[in-house]
Image 1 (cartoon, helix red, strand yellow):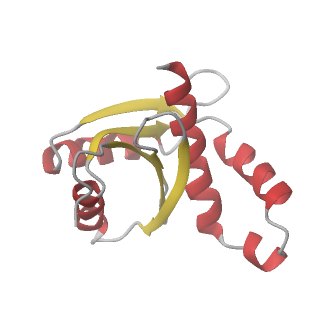
Image 2 (cartoon, helix red, strand yellow):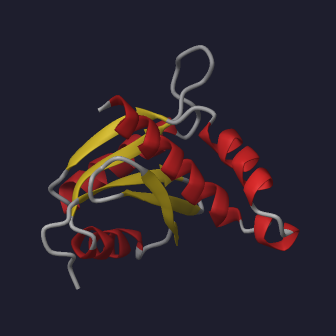
Length: 141
């Protein structure tokens, strides 16, 4: 069920095992952690469903760089993922530097999530990293 006339931006924090997702609010002012998907054969199907249901108009994809400015070790894998996504989904995909977002997310989680057992949810970091990527993008617009 699609949210008519309310478009949003989706951010993706791509990982080898998990994909963190964040959404913008309808006014495209703030980002919030949304969901974590497994990086498995159903990934593109699940993403297409979310894109349709949430009326996504644009995707911001995190791309990590090293301190020397070169792509990090999984950068090439992320670029391949972007190509696959572009073939399946006809939306603009913006690459965004995601350096240090996981560390920032971990720090935020330690401060805001009081239960240790909830902090162990690895998907929590992925979702929050995606939210940081998206919020930085929104702040620049």
